[in-house]
Length: 118
Image (cartoon, rainbow, N blue to C red; front, side, top):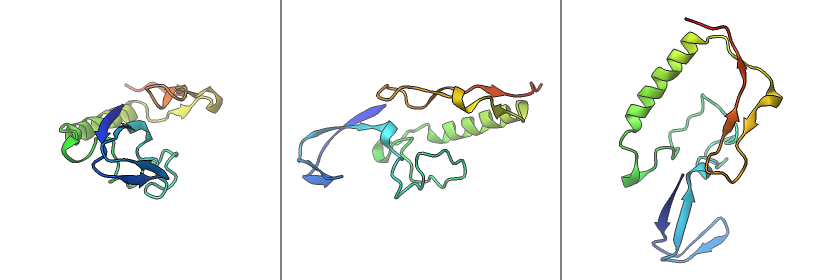
């Protein structure tokens, strides 16, 4: 969930001075969280124009399987919504998040109610 880089030049980023040659550890879970690029970055918005996201990396490190993953994810969602068209979150208070500072960021448990499909 992170990648290492070496600063190619002296730079100041977010008020922090980074010297040329310093090693950096970039946490992917922190990417795509800039409100100036992604308004309301902490909110799930399936209609968001997220063309500049870093989920698949960037440049020479861009994921070679990105197009396949997009197709597979679309097919998976179509199947889920076909089989479970009427789901609702069972209880907002029951949503369980992974604790901060773990390697996994996101929801650990999300109880839902639905009518079983085919």
